[in-house]
Each structure stands twice: as structure tokens, then as C-alpha cells.
Length: 476
Image 1: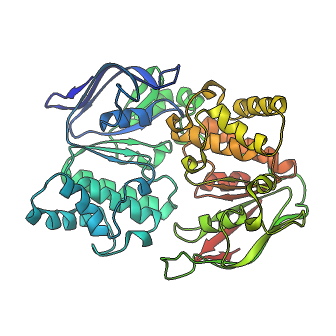
Image 2: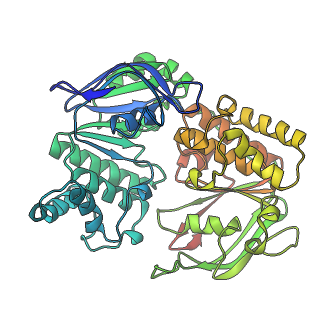
């Protein structure tokens, strides 16, 4: 049960655990944890260790009567504010100021207080525009700062942040971290931050708590914790400062023929004032891994959608080496045998109610028989560390598990080319290394890889060619 915490405590868990509906294993269990008022805590742990589940419970978003089973006791000091990984899930209005005011209006804040509190929150969150700025014209980092403003306008005592810099370029991520620092200093709020890349937050937190499915694995001040237990924590997959995965081998042969060829690609969104992509020419060759990098809003994801045949260009086309129709004009059954796509938001590509069924969809659509499909599904489950989740609903997975499932679904139809948008998002160090090694193996087997990424370690480890996208244009 969830009750009110004692005055000096922001959070107290006593033997608490939660199991999602339809799952055999517990997301987390036997959790004993106290967070005192005013503490700044970084919550770390391997992918699937229950971090996001705990944050959702603290925010009151888990209903044990409908969405799962709960044991133990969880006490929380309210009110609570939560930032999700994806800011799109929390933006509801067309103008920035209206979006911040939305929560205040729903909490029946007196009308004369709303706009002063909106302006105060926008300033405190470091939002760079006025309240009339369209939310549809914001970069990822700007959206996160707007979401932060909407959260702090409600003046929460407990601030929960679930990978708030996910999918942001380094500059945008730094601005979000600076905004969070400014907010907690100004308000005195308690914060609990979930992030795999712990090093980015160490100068802002008093304490690191490492979770595993069975409760707390380690707990203490950052310096002492990582000095005493760094090696053991790294072995579980925690990104321990100063410890990096083994570099991936480079391509052993020169790239082969062009598998995908893009010519004169341009695209403008209906509400946009400038094209998102402008006059792009690009060859993606067999046995080559290409990284598309650049700031949020530069056009990388739009370009990736066109390269995967999922977005019709305003001008130009993408063709494949098989000489068939341009990709955007092909039927889905034909397209998935040529190119596999991993979306920035993995939930946008899930259709089935179990992980195994999700993996079987593509092979069945292209005519693979049931026996061959079953073998392929079993192989992908094992390679992506998803075997224990075969019967789970894809939407109940952790962020890192969803990302690995999206990669597996892209591989399931055995395409020659893969277009992946932020493939390493949400991965602990162990699953990151395994995923990068898997992609390197595909590249060495002759596949074409095109990866949109803000992960400099990933780009350094895998990319044979790096292309910067700026204002919709390629800058080699």
C-alpha cells in the first residue's frame, strides 16, 4: 500500500515490490529504502531492475488492482512531480505557456495566480522562449525544459526524473541538467533521478542507490560507493565512472555495393516554416556502418524515416540495389525484406500482446513457415537477452528492454539494411556492449547499418563513417 511519509522523509519503502499484470517475475521485490527530505538521489542499476517501475509507483501511476500485484509498504511525501523519458507524452497544448498552465488549471489554482506561476516556472527551468512560442517548434531539449517547467509550476516536494536527457544531443542534455540543478537549489525539492549514464549526474547528487530486481544492491555517496564496489557493479551492467566497455572491432573489409541510394531528398512538415531535410544525396553500402549525428531538430530522424521507406519525400527518392520501386512506394511485405527500421520511440512499432508474438509478426508476413519462425524467434530472444520476457506484454518492459525488442523486430525479417534511431538508448553497460557487438557482426556479414545517435561512445565504437546533419543538410 502507498501512504504518506513521515515529516523528515520523502520516501520510505518497506519490503515493497510490484509485479506487472501477466508477468511471472516481479519487476522489483523486497525493497527497503529511505530517502530523506532535500536529498538528491541517483537511481542506477541494470536494465530491467525496476527503476522506472519504482518511479511510476511513487508518482501514483501503478494501480495494483488493475495493472499488477503489490506487496509491502510504500510511503511518499507529496505532492509529486514526474518527468518521463519522452517529453512528447507530457506536452498537450500548442503554446508553451498554455502547456505549463494546463496542470495549474486542472489543480484549480486561482486564475490570478496561474500566469505569474507559469512565468516563474519557465524562467526557473531555463526555457529560452516566451509563453506564446509554439510547442511544435521546439527541439528535444527545449521540450524537456518545458515539461520541467510544467512539473515545477505545481511546486512538488518530490521531483522524479526518468532518464530526462534520453535522446538529447550533448548540448541539450547539459542544459536540462543545469535546469534541474537550478530547480532543486531554488525550491529545495527532493529529487530521484533515473539514468544509466551515472557520471553525468554525479556533481548534482548526494547519493547513488543501485537497484536489482531483488531490492537494493548498493547504496552510498558516489565517490565511496564506486571506489569500494565499482568492479562488482560494473559486472552487473552499471555504467561505473572510468570503466568503459571493450572497443568493438572495426570493419575488416572495404564497403561493397550501394544497398540503399538516396537522391535529392527533401521534406517539410506541414506546420514547419523550413524544410526538415534539404537536397540530401547519400549512398549506404554493404558492410558499412554509418552514423548520422547532429543537434536535436537537425533533421536526422526525418531523414532516417525516408531512408527506411516509411516517409514519402517531397522531392527525390530512395532506391534499393534490387532495382525495384522506390522504397516509399513499396508494400510493407516487400519493404521489410529490404530494410528494417528501429524507431526513436520503440512503443510506436509494437503491435502484438507478447514479446514472442511481436517477433513472429514480420517473419509470418513475409511467408516464413511456423517452424522456421519459431526457430528465428528463439534465436532473437536469446541474442537480445529477452528469453525470460517471451510471454510479457511489450508495453510492460523497461525502456532498455523495449529498445532491444525493437532491434530484434527489425532483424526478424532478415533485411539487407538496418536504419536505427538511437539504438543504444536505455541500455546498461553489459547490454550496450552486447548490442554493439551484435550490430558489428551484422556489418561484418555484409549488412548495411545507418544509425542516428547522440551516443559518442557508440559512434566511436561502431561507425565506419560519420555524417553530421545540420539544418537538414549533410555535413561530412
